[in-house]
Length: 210
Image 1 (tube, rainbow, N blue to C red):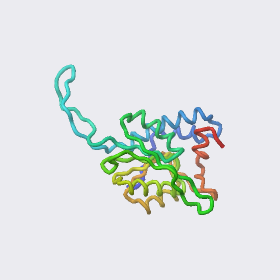
Image 2: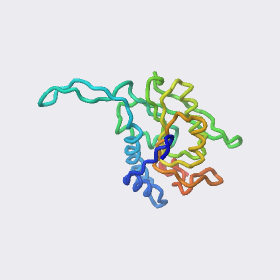
Image 3: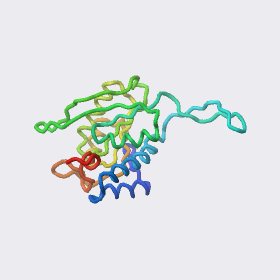
Image 4: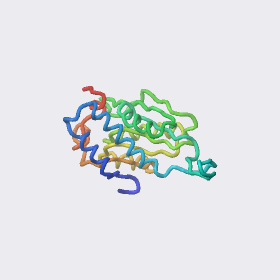
């Protein structure tokens, strides 16, 4: 673990990730595992949320009890695979505001092209958690963070399932102020830009498409 990257080595996270990597795991089970693992990762990425207290009455006596402070945080899904992480985190933080960044890779330039962008209001005052299962080349992730910063976001974290060293380096170079939380740092990228050993295409495995 470095200051820039948090590798979540919790046994439940690693066990579920192994099941997700297995090519024999069905779409339905893969989707359920992603939902479960996203909640465990969300626990880690929200560890430093600001707190305050409020006066409440327990059945026994009044007390000043801890509660979250500030604006509701914003979850931003990098389409389409980010939606798999989003669903699980929303179960844990149902009051979170939600945004979407749509990017596709131009086959000639290999650079990300924006086709959709919608984020919550007052994003400059919110903690923004950008989610995408895979941090591979880092190009689309960097582009998504660029767009979020242009919209005013100042406090951003990036949550992913798998990261390649190449993607981590690219993100650190472009956005050193954005911490990364991941369940695994894999070996490398292959010639097609897939994470190795990885788990294949997260979107295809989640939605049952090829």
